[in-house]
Length: 289
Length: 158
Image (cartoon, rainbow over all chains, first blue to last red; front, side):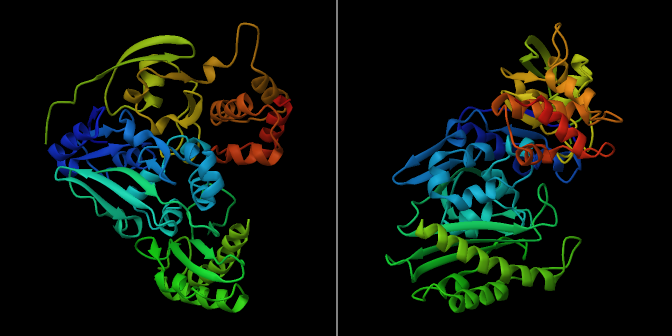
């Protein structure tokens, strides 16, 4: 491992200054569950790590304006242990509670999961279906990027040198909505998704028709995929097997998987279709309360 | 490339109730800090990438993989390791239960299992078998098999 310096600034500005000075030879350190593995494997050769856990904005989880703000360094156990998230954003609980085991969840958070930009990141699809927005600070000021546009390739994001993810803002879940995320793995725990699907549905007041839906797919493309057409196909349709099967078929079309040690192209396409149906049903069930 | 090593980090931390002042190389893991700087070798190195849990310690009340924490990060924090479990009065109930249930063979994974299981029982004294298995999913054992370990944790539960 290349010897790096350790810096623990107390403000976003200081963190951005250190990151800007070192360019791609410095990285923010939140839970360290990806960073230290990559540094040790010499995937990253770093001159400095910037521990962001002393910066209040990055470590706070708050309910504001009806939505929630998740600081980029908030660990998973605090996310799924939050009563508002548990009550109103169950898909975020579904995703954050299956990232690694308990030890990993003590440290790893959704901000790191997003910045690590693995196509299989279980925390990302739930954020996409909830229309979450990444708040970024950098040498040129602040900007916002929708989570579905954040990842640009395996391990690559929109973040420019010197930029830092500060928080993930999740808007209030619409009335009569429900959301869910699941993945397929051949074990019960501690594995990386062969395929994953997140769904948010908004039903009309009768609970029998879809008003709108958002669907996102993990591990079946170079980035987590926002399957826009699949979600939009449900708008105005009755909550029945036919509309759900049609949306699942569109989700399957949106997937562009590869064959690797975890699964084949054919298996992953099949999984996307099956999991999408299941998650639409589960989200609808949750929407009806 | 710089040739000089980055400067060491001054860390004041409480380990098993005892305060330590250390100068830690900034890239040194908490695992190596415990084993090499302090001499607490009960915490074991396994995979070094967060899969096996052999290096599990308790950091401010949460179980973590100490291979994925920097020593520099524990300034002002409380660290508890397997060495802190037994008291002069005797073994911790989990340690006693592991002995009675023969929940170890080679023993490399045992400190991690003990610290992880303690993290569960400290907060949930009567977990279900499913809960125990779920909680311990981040700890791997390559020889005993998990049944004896789970039985030992159940025995130490209330």
